[in-house]
Every structure is written in C-alpha cells, then in structure tokens.
Image 1 (cartoon, rainbow, N blue to C red):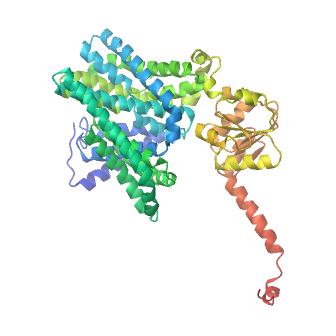
Image 2: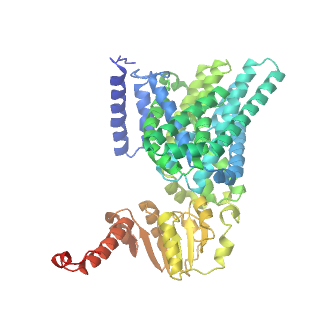
Image 3: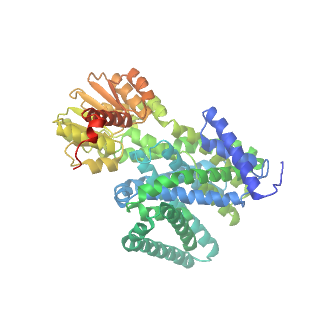
Length: 563
C-alpha cells in the first residue's frame, strides 16, 4: 500500500477531484457508467491502495450530505397523492421481496456451509437494494416519473424502513437482556415515529408554506433553507433512532406540496450530483481488497442470486398484482444489487459479535459485483427487455388490469390523433387539436400526468412510447396522425421504429430539441419534426416582420401627431 500525506486538506480534495475527473472521463470514453468509475476511484485512493481516504475521513461527511440531499430531492417530487396511489404496490412488493429473498438467501447460505447466524445475516443483507444508486440511475435516464420508476422508489423506501427497523431491533436485542425490554424498545420506536410524522404534518399545514413565501424573496436564501431543512431533519431522525435518509426524505415530502418545489429541486440537482461523487468514492474506499480473494466462489453464487433471483421475485409479485411484463421487468431490475445498508448491517453484526471479518468481506464483495453489474443492467434495460420479452409472458396476467383501466373505453372510441406526451407542450397541443375538432387520445408514461389530464376533453391512457408491445394495444389503424411532444431522441426513434414495425400507414410528427436532430428523425420515418423554440421564434419573427412592413417610413412617422 502506498501512502502519501498531503500538506493540507485543500490540496487533498483538489487531487481527489482531479483523479475523479480523469477516471470519469476515461469511463465515459469507454462507455462505462460514472458510478462504477467513481467506485473505482474510491478503491484507488482508499486504504487498500494509495491510502488517501479512510472510512472516517472528511469525504464521509460530504458523502452523507450527498445522501441526504438525494433523498430530499426524491421526497420533493413525491406529493401525498403519489404516496397514496403507490402505497399498496410499494408495500406488497417491498415486503414480499424482502421476505422471499431472505428465505431463499438463507438456504443458499446454509448450502454454502455457513452457520445459522451467519447465514441469517447474509440473507438479510441480500434483500436490501441501494436507493441512492437506483434513484441516481433513474434520474439520469429521466425515468423517476415513469410508472416503473415510481413503483421502484416506493418499494425501495419500504426496504429502507425495514432495514432501519432491523438494525434498531438488533441493537435493542443486544442491549436488552429480556423480551420485555425488547418489546418496550419497539413500542418506544413506534411512538417516536408517529409523533415525528405528526409534527411534520403540523408544520406542513401551518408553518412551511407561509415561511417559504417569505424566503422566496431571495432565491439564494430559499435554496439555503431547503438544504438546511434536509440536513436538520436527517439529524433529528438520527437522534430519534431512525436513519438520516428517512429524515431527509420526509423533509422533501414536507415541501412537496408547496409551490416552490420545482424551483428548489432544479437548483439543488447540480449540488446533489457533486456531493454524490463523494458517496461513491467513500463506498469504494471502504472495500478491503486483502480479504476479498478468499470469497470469490460464494460471492459469485450469491451475486447471481441477487442479479437474477431478486428481479424474478419482484416480477412475480407485480405480475400477480396486474402489471404488464415490461413494467415488472424494469422495476425488478432495480433490486438487482445490494445496498450500502447491507454493508452497514454487516458492520453492526461485527460490532455485536454475531459475524466475523470474513463474512463482512463476503458481503462487501457481493456488493461490489452486484452494484457494478446491475448498473449496466439498468442503464441498458430497454435493449435488454427487447431481447428477452418473448420469454417474460409467464410474469403477466392475461389481462394486466392495473395498466389497462382505460383500454375498454378507448377501444370502443374513435380517434383522429394519438398524442404521446402530456406535459406542458403536449397539453397545449392537445387543447389546440380539440379546438380544431380533432378526436385525441393522449398517452404518457407518468401516471400523475395521466390522472391530471383526465377530464380535459380527450381520452388519456398510461403507456410508454418506447414499449413496442404497448403500441399493439393502440387503435393505430383508425388514426390519421401520431404526434409525439416528447423531445428525447431515443424515445422518438423507438416510437418511429415501433410504428414502422407495426405497419402504421398514417402521418407521424415528432419533437426535437434542436435542428441537427431533425434529419436523423426524418430519416427514421418522421413526416414532420417540431422544434418548439425554433418554430416559436420563426413564427414570432414572421408576425413582427409583417407588422413592421405595414408601418409608414420613419421620416413620415416623425410628423405623425402624438396621441
């Protein structure tokens, strides 16, 4: 191991960020996820190699701030309506996955020769997936607001709550000498949680919104308060016996119903991404390479179970609940890794004397394998699904009713236009089409937007333009137009290819960010490409130029009487 002592903290952080930037650039050039590159940076600068960063270093503080801010931003996007609508599926899939993974993981661990206590710890560690990593990946892919994204975040939050309860229970069990004491610990925990949530509710109702109205006079002060609020709530939860992640998430939820949540979220994204760099570096720095080599075979077996078995469990649960195979598959991939909570649980087991360093090394190696592999699986989830979807029919009911609540209505109706994307641009297009007497069927992958557009004068359905299987459920033969207001190139290209494969003969119009994308979209089969900003600017100049032409010459206007 190489060790180098920096002259000051500033120089150390500068070198660390330069190493991260260079490694990240190499990773991008090699088409590798930045998450894996940053974990590699952590391993390189950690105690096992260069020794620049340790687990109790200042990097750990920045990592914790990044975690708190990430969960705060997630909570900021979840209003009470989403929590109510996703509560049942989140609870069923989250608890179901935890239970079945624990059971199967326990018997696999026993088969690998572990003792009962060690097997129990390993099995429980395999059940928890990384909320931080999954939310980061879904955010990068802009799938947080999709149906599978909301389901995944829901059951990941359930997992986080379960692991907190498990750790509190283990600590209480070690400290309490009898069952009565353990029972009192559980009652005290529930009471604290109920009082904390009640306090948040009162603040949401009477304090936070008026306070934000005052703070919003200065955007800098508003962002500073939001960050401080997230950290303060996380700290309060730690003192109450919960985790800082739960507190930061609840802090975000408490501001989600205010009119400032979009402004706060947009301003905090860059800071969140910067601080998360240190989380991944800290995760890599915690790996002890010296103890990993002896656990390769058990780690591969357990990693395959996590990478394949966990998604299968989630797919079975979601399929039984009435979701399509695509939604179940994309949501199931998010549990194909173990969490930083798994490592924390293992460290707790070591401190309590339940497991040894070898078991901790095994859990760490499984974490490294599954986090790296599942990152690729999630980033390339759509191509992966297209390759294997014919074999996934067993995970779908004959009628996936939860995603087809509007199908019976729309199948009996006639439409002129199918409109993909019901955001601000798409909703305006839909209203203009209605004014011109067109019968519109609106489609969006965000269930909240679908709910909001109901009753706006046109039929709406949940669906994903990138899902070729979903296109078969649409009345393509009767419509003259398919119009996409979504500006992401991969989505529009997938839609164009899907329409072509299904033999659609009507006209297709798609939307792009810039003019250089128009040629590629037209080559893929688009009849028209809308470029909102350029089109609006051209129309504005035409209108302005027409008005200028009608004006008299400047010298004539000088003699006009002033009105």
